[in-house]
Figure 1 (cartoon, rainbow, N blue to C red):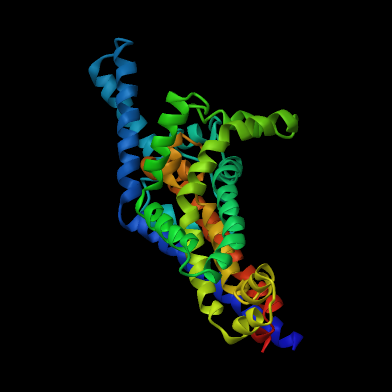
Figure 2: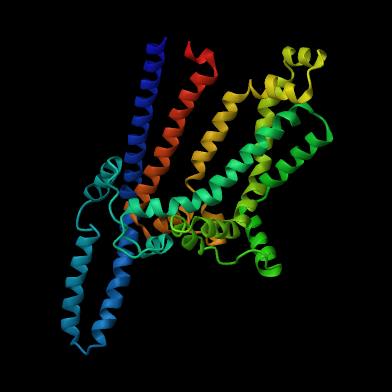
Length: 359
C-alpha cells in the first residue's frame, strides 16, 4: 500500500508541475503577444528621453546636436529594455529563467519604492522583502478567521435555525456584499483621523519588520501597533464567508444518523460537535483553510492601496502599472508555486486523515 500511495503522490506532483510550467508560459505569452509590456516600456522610454532632452537644452547645446544625442540615447534605452528584440526573445526567456528561480532584476522605480530599496534590485529580493508584510496583515487575518470558524461554524450548524444561525447568515450576507476596500476606507477615517487611535502611515511597517532580528521585542510591539487595524478590517470582512462556508459543509453531517444517535445517548453537545461533526468534515475544511492561506500570499491590491500597505498586492499593482515584466512574472511564479505546493500538501494530508483515500 505504501508503494501505491507513493505512486499516487508522484503522479500528483507531475501533474502539478506541468500546470506550473503551462501557467508560466501562458503568462509570458499574454504579456508579450498582447504588446502590453512593449507599450508601457515605450512610454517609460519616452518619459526618460523627454527629461534627457530638457537637461541637454539647459546646457545650451545646439538643436541638431541635441537631436543626435537624444536619438543615441533612445537606441541605448531600446537595447536596455529589450525593445530591439521580438517579444518572444524578450519575455519567454524570463518565464524559463523564473522556473529556475532566476527572476532577474526589477526594472521599475515604482516597484523599488514599494520594496523600500534602491535599484539595482533583484526580483527575488524584492519579493522576499515584501512577503513578510503581507504575512503580517493578510495571512494572520485569514488564520484568525480560520480558527474562529473552525470553533464556531460546526456549533452553528448543530444549532441550525437558532438565533445564532440566523445572525451568522445575515452577517455573512452583509459582509459579502460589502467591499473590503470600502470597509478599510471607513476604518482609516474613523480610527486614524477621527479617533486617532490607529496610525495613518502604514509604511512604517517596513522599519519594524527590518528591525525584528536585531530588536524583536520592540519591533513586535511596533508591528502590532501598526497592523492591528488592517488585520481587524480583514477579519471583519472575511469572517462571515468563513463561518457560512464551513457551516454549509457541517450541515450535511449534522443530519446523519450517527449524530442523532449520539445526541439520543446523551453525549455532551461539545463532544458531538468535535467528534461526530468536525472530525468528519476535516478533509474539506482543511482544503478551504490551506488554499485560503496560500491565496493570501498574493495580497489584496485595492485594500493594501487604501492602507498604503507595502505588501504583495501593492507590489503587483506597481509591476502592472509600470509594465515591469520580470517582477510581474516573478510574482505570478511565486504565488502559483505556493498554491501548487499547498495543493500537494493537501494530497498528503488527505492520505493521513482519511484512510479511504489510500485505497
